[in-house]
Length: 254
Image 1 (cartoon, rainbow, N blue to C red):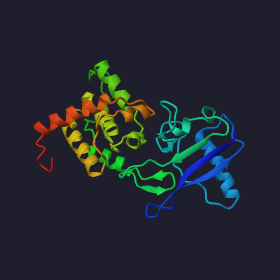
Image 2 (image 1 turned 180 degrees about the horizontal axis):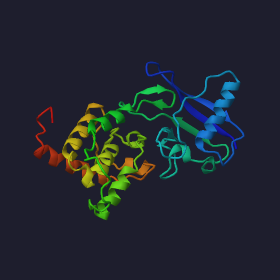
Image 3 (image 1 turned 60 degrees about the horizontal axis):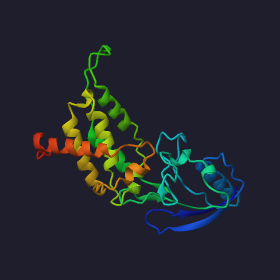
Image 4 (image 1 turned 180 degrees about the vertical axis):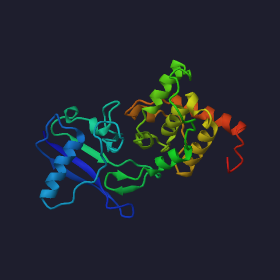
């Protein structure tokens, strides 16, 4: 298979970037999208050219590192699939494919297809820890958890923090990511002691990072590789509203 790739190349955040066209040949339909980029980079290095920078780690759809926009869609055209799990058999021989980095003010470009997503780390840090009484292992059934809450918490916890929700949102909102992290802890009794503080601090940090507000377009849910539901955003809003009225939110030290 042969593909014509239109790839965004940019040295750093301070220099302008542009789309550069490459032709990659001898691509197997069993290759993943990142393996296809590996083939391109091997050819570029062999020819004495600079390779295309892109993020990757596990290549198993778990880590969320493979953040790129493929043909205008974060992670590409396949539903519920990270870019590293997207295979070339989903494209036609001779296709032209555009590849760009995630576009958001809060995700500044580092180089080529790599963006700085450390804003997500700071949001997580703002949420703090879960306090527990350590000691001997407790009886497994000593803390009862409703199955419905356990299922919803597990679904929210499957978020890999890739940032596709931000890239797809017309407002560059991080609401789906933040909501998933608030829900995965808030729905379980283990996360209740800090639930109000967690909601207030994480939402506040999200605003400080420069993410936009959610306007219910649901583009985030459509491109999420882990199919996180926007119902979590409604949960986050309720948690934030309740915490604002009951948690002394005017106290900056809360």
